Image (cartoon, rainbow, N blue to C red):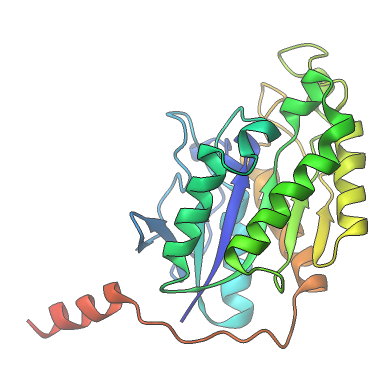
Length: 250
């Protein structure tokens, strides 16, 4: 049985922690969806850019797999530099996420969604519409994938952004965080994950490897406060497992 999680948003969910600084984790029960099939975890898990790195979902999945003694799948759909408008219903990005999730649902049960996005809106003055636009995206995912009973986890933007290489480009980051908190406050099965105290790479734009590890644990802790203990996970056939069993006989 595989319990899976969608990771979605822009670069800090894509993962930009330097690989040579990545903390070791037990990845033996972590799977990554590639071409509709579950593959053993390898880094970077979300290679949306040539400079993709370690990811907060790694430590999240490690904690989940350890606690629930189950294979844990990650559906990687984050894309760096993207705005909320690029994730709206009918967009290529959201359609891609929905398509990949539907493939994942054939061999796993989706147990939650991890979201981190907002730097774009913090730099474009679009933060007043953040809650309205994001709730449309979230509700579309819930409806299309029947995810009404799973947590949506929304991570806060980093306090280091005012010191980033682009000057005051992200001056409204706190306003975005306020919008994320409002979304979590007014929607069921939705939680805000604080990034307070976490640190960045030299660019002061992306969380560093150590902080991403800590951030993933924070996501898991908030997940635990929201999850439905009565959620039913149905055993689903995994073609890859059946194939491996046949190969082992040869």
